[in-house]
Length: 377
Image 1: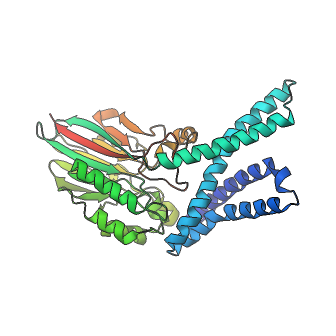
Image 2: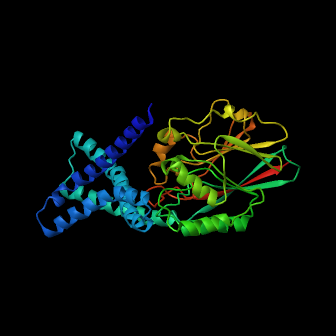
Image 3: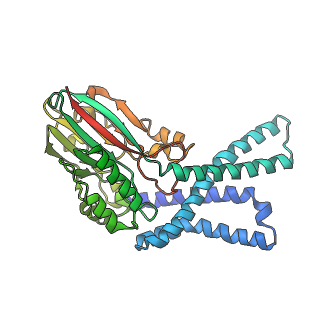
């Protein structure tokens, strides 16, 4: 499919869903919004402003106005999260009331009003909690034993994924990554995609902090979907200035019996008429004397690809980011978070992501940075 057609379909779908979410909320509050009073007029103006802020954020981000984009982004993406939660909670209530009415039990107007008020309070409470959870980054530690490196030798890898440096995520995230690196002294730092979005706030300070992290085996990154959405040139420049070696469909030997491969995200087809090559197109079959790590943004396992890697590190899913969207993401990515044992003694680890995309909230999907120890046996 032509990339322009694909992009048009994607944008149309996004706008359609966003429009329907707004329509549902407005429809549920039409009695208040249509009043001819000053408070109702003010509420309509606020509502129109909120609806337009996500679009304004994309414009300000693209034109490198991160300070303004931070304000519009917080308001607009918070509104988007609120709408999603409102649909999820009030939608369940509507289905229950509809079913009850079909069974001959009709709810009173007072009861339906109570449902609306309760839904609003629940949505606001979840977002308040979610703003704190989004900042509470956990350091997850896993160990993997292998006979492909010297007995009792340890190689410590620090994985970051889905950081999303942007107008909303800036210096404090870089400082957290640096702190975890200082506390754990990794031999290798890898970024498995979506390191950035357009309009990074405090960009130069972030680059300085990330550039100061110098593991002995280096720092390696791959392109996620957002690197392509942000444009290849913009992403490559930031990644290089932050001190990462970018692997785009290639493999390198970094020493210590360790081989690392990186593949582009399939989102490349939306910005360029191209697709990432199959794993067997640029990787050799794994051997008995080299431990092979594959960095791949999305946690899909190509058929037969287990012959080519010992460990695949992925991200992308955010573990759903805001529950109950967990279940929708789970349908698309059955291997959504954590460690999975695959065929041919291969392993997949899916990072929940350190940052947030869009709404600056997480709910029952705690962010993480991962420390992986490869231990010789």
